[in-house]
Length: 456
Image 1 (cartoon, rainbow, N blue to C red):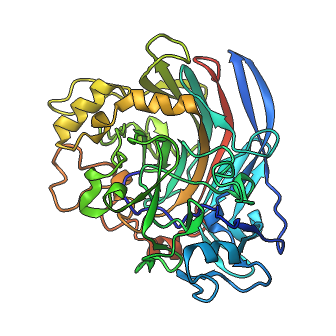
Image 2: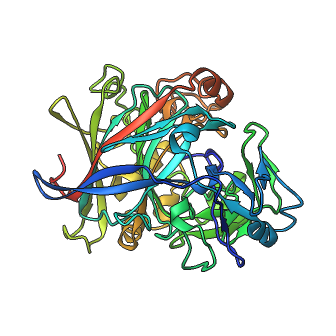
């Protein structure tokens, strides 16, 4: 994920006094089946659930329905300081379909962009895959494995992002490290990523109210003094006009709170503890503008299958990650990934350290990915276990131009690496797409994981 402040407001929970659990709305996780494969045509169906991220949830006083947080402001009486706020406020259950537009059907998960609920209008969502016991997040080590899913994004226009990715958050949502966190993974706590988002309401056991400022463009979000960082593997960030897969790495392991320069905000983007740009493979940006989109080789007017293979140097899960390969399947046809076609850039069709270094040099981008260890760091993160995230969101920082248009906009679009998709540079404005494209949605289905060559 590219911009430092692109995401919708997110939350972490835990406190010295315990982040409370509300009882006004029952929490029932939607069921979702996935398959674990051992060899080709040998896959076992598993019963899992998904859980909504804590930051979308209703946060109210423990003894009443009084909001602790309304719009993009905190209640000063309930939240006079970070610790008291965490003690006073309870995180409640979610009406997944009615309030958040989240539905499941067998192996399919659909995320609706805008949902008019009984009490408020909801924008976007983010969910995590729970384990088969519905207690913790399912943790993945994808080294020497492949991950496959179907996606239907025919209803996902310019400016939106239907994302599927892994982050190195705690399996229990932080309960073990912050023992009196009573909510944990069952209420979607513990989020982190390489953007070190500062719009998280609770981090490391305390409310992120210090220095909190409401967003000038998002009536539901703001930013505080702290951010929350961890390694991130973006398997899929896309709409019907563009797509990218991108490893991002950090100098820290696991969910880590940042402050100041560590967060890499604004002009300090390349001074922080995480690689915010990552090493992206976007077919359009890499020179093939006919590969993915409506009516193109991979036709986004229809559902298709995305296969991502994580190869190691010794073909073992204990090895060092050294290549991420991509292929697609549509209408029974296996489609190899596109190849780079940029003057001065050798031909690549996968993400390797050599590709990342060459791409950064030709595009004139800062190579923080290499500085922080590249694919080897990403593989180490997988060995520790990473949670699966699926989301739909719009971008208040850069209008998603970094994914589907020309970005940055203050340099010629003919410069190498600037043109990333066919969407106009005046597209993706959140107020516009929330008003006019609210019925947009993305559906992820048929998730499979297993050894290389076993899932398609």
